[in-house]
Structure formats: structure tokens, C-alpha cells
Amino acid sequence: MVLDDGREAVAIVALDLCWPMPDSGYIEVRKEISERTGMDERKILVSCTHCHSGPDFVARKGCPLPIERQRELIEPWVEELPGRIAHAAELAREDMREARISFGKSYVTGISYNRRKRIPEGVAKIICDTGDMEHIVRKQYESWGMSPEEAYRCAPLGIPDGPIDPDLPAMLVEDVEGRTIGVLTNFACHAVVCAPPAPYLISAGFPGYMTRFVEKVRGGVCLFTTGAGGI
Image 1: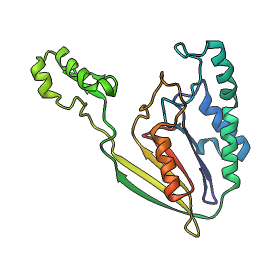
Image 2: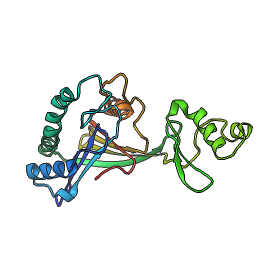
Image 3: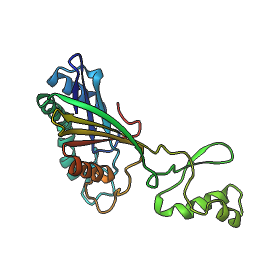
Image 4: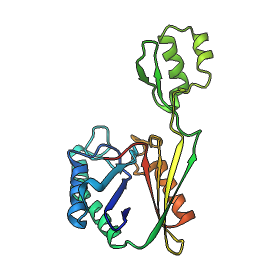
């Protein structure tokens, strides 16, 4: 998404990838966009949804493919990635038109939770995967000195009760005739729902489903940014 008020232009890049990009990936992306569009690198935000089922940047043990074969597939697309992203920004810059912007905010609860728990010593401890949450939380309480009965009473749902950010802000960009050009959304939830190792499929996770739904309902292109992510 590229926005220009006639005085300065900004670009917002949302990638269906896990973080971090390798080496100086973000810097390379901003540099490439700047070179192709003439935009100030400091006015370009690059964000990843942190989807755990996105394509990987490096070869890893445990994958069904041999390491060398993984490298043959991964390394070329990683090398081409900054150029591909910059090309998308270039197309957005060329397709700019007069528009109006509006903002809104809603609240979403029931799909996110804080999986860190403060133990008696004041340290925040991560609490396992969702599927094992109920069992793990109670075992954690027992390791802190609670009896099994006390642990059961203190964690009846088995879900940590720390603070979350339920805000879902959105920015709508429409042309002068009211047609949707783009939507920018932001929500603080870790996109780890369908992570590997099985079945080794590429997916944008719930952010991908959400953006496609918004595009179907509103039209245009929808971008998802996660929490305070962006560099």
C-alpha cells in the first residue's frame, strides 16, 4: 500500500511470512523499494504476519527433503524476494489515484490469549502449545508448590489469564466514487494455528483467511499487520 498526500509518500508492506527475514532482509527490501520508486527509505514500513506455516528462509533438519534439495528450492526465492516485493510497491506507486481515507476500530475476543504466566518469583514463563494447555498449566502450578487439588481449582480452564490487546483498528482507502482500493488492518495475535512439521503445506494462516474474506466483502486489497510488528 502506497499513500501520498502531495508532500510525502509512505509505503506499507505486509508479508505472509514468519519473522525474522534473514540477515539484513528488511533493509534490503526498503532499499530496493526506494531505488525503484524514489521514496524515502525511512517512510517504508515492512511487516511480517509471523505465520508459522509460511515458507522458510533456511534449510532445516526434520523436513522430508534432504538439506541440499531444500537449499536448491529456498535460496533462489530468498535472493529474489526483495526485488519481488519492490516490484509490488512499484506497481502500487504507478496505480495511485485520488482517494479518501477513513478509520475505525472494533474489539475481538475469544481467539487470542496471553500464553505467559507470572510465577511467584515474578518471572514470566511461556506455557506450551494450545493443545496441551490445560494439562501443562496445572502441572506448572504443581511445580510451583500447589497440590493437584489447588492447581485444578486455580486453573479450571487451563488458559493463562494475562493481558491481551483486543483492539482491531482498520483503515479504509476508497476512490472518489466509493469503491474500495485497500484496507489496512492490525491485530495482536500470533499466527501459529497451523504450524509445521506436518503436513508441510504453505499457508498464510488465519491472517490469510481474514484478508481474503475482507477482500470478498469490501473489494480491493486487504493487508494484515500483527500487533506492533514492523521495521
